[in-house]
Length: 296
Image 1 (cartoon, rainbow, N blue to C red):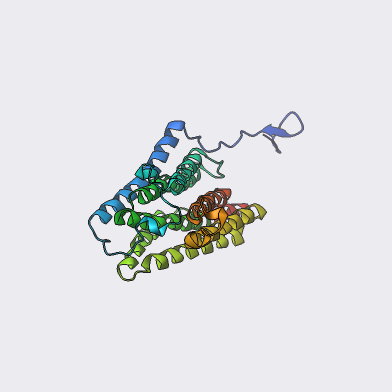
Image 2 (image 1 turned 90 degrees about the vertical axis):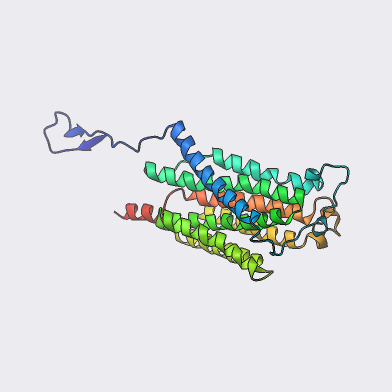
């Protein structure tokens, strides 16, 4: 880099200024270790949920168990884990989504710590997709109360993590706040112990919190690209809710006889997951910090 100077320089008053060193690049080994850390945190949480459910704490919670709650007709000649083939196989989509985003590391603006934090948030979200797919498949396969409870329960911290990510984008790294949000999210499933609509109430609150957080981030720091992502995510979320609730009613139409409303709701769920990833990774680093740096 050349810079003007008043010191004695033989040619045109210019001197050599050494380039400012950027953040130290992270080795593949470090990246793998950080990825494993994020996945371990997700697995630990899932294991705690499984152990809690196995104690019988939620045995009196209302859940829908049995093939009669699905419009897809079971195929008796198929093995039980594929008895409803379309509603079963669609859960592979969550695994593919999780693997895709786990391996995708978008360039992050900032120092090495910013990169580590952004990748951790992404890897946890991807890990949630990797765990959620099998949990849903087990519910479809076994049709047991415990698997239904796990399916419901694990949905909540997924929506809560998008709130965590939005808080990071606005206010930076606050691990204790993030942990508190996730703990409150997990604890909110306790509403099911007091009312048969407890899960629906908790889920509605989580969806509203996630949508509000994303809209707030977009209003403060968004652009046409983020507007596209958040719009598609909201459309997918609406499709997920409507198609799931209308599973049996939609079965009267030819389009939904084989590939039922429940199946298409899972397509929408995977898509809202994907568009949430696109929206959140579009902002890569804490936006308030970037705005402050630009104003300096």
